[in-house]
Length: 168
Image (cartoon, rainbow, N blue to C red):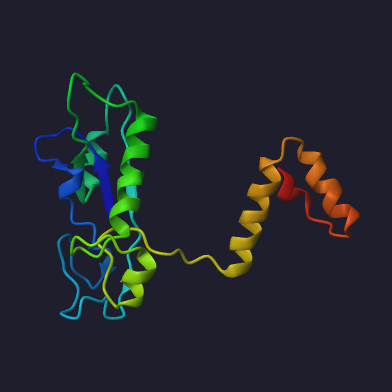
């Protein structure tokens, strides 16, 4: 599914989007899950969020390709958010609604999933295998050290030698 930020007249308020349509059952935007509120074994559909250039927005071609266009509501004297702020607001909103079950309760994602109810938002646990997840976590830790060489030296001291690609 492609969601594009745009100010066209047909764009919807981001708060009004139906984010819980990301299970592929052959249908399109707006499809609902089965009566039990689960995905019925269907696969999660990938989601792409497109944010336009601050001056020109998205292209006409992108607008045509998007399954849904949305805008971020603003109040006060602001005319627009810069691109990084708009992206952060969009992703934070997606994250916030993903932890809700649509009933108004503020259950966390784990409670929602364990209760057998579908979360109301688009974000679900990813499909990285455990090894790749740990590799990415380690790389993040190594890159967050003030002196990158220190992490490599500490690991080497403990007999752990990592490929150079982990330090790049």
